[in-house]
Image 1: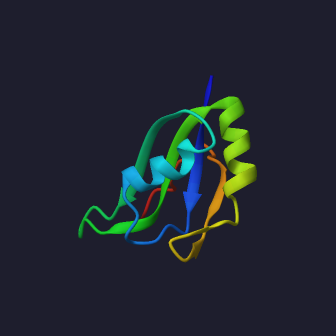
Image 2: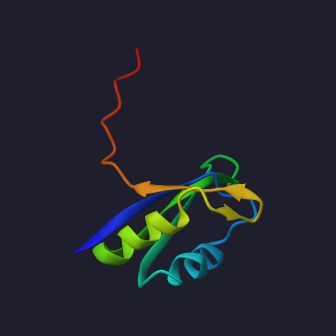
Length: 88
């Protein structure tokens, strides 16, 4: 099984490769997905990393609150996206 981790407060300069390398120190990284603004294409400062269960637990413990390129990261298990309320 694998877990998806939410990674917040990423620096704008972060790349999928730099985030993969950061998390790879704590286990096998299955995928990295950094979120960008659909209109401007600019990074939005967060993303998701998928890792095996045991590795994900280690990565959260090691990286939550750690400093990456001058920013304090928020790392926790990703929550299911809640359905949006319709706009009127």
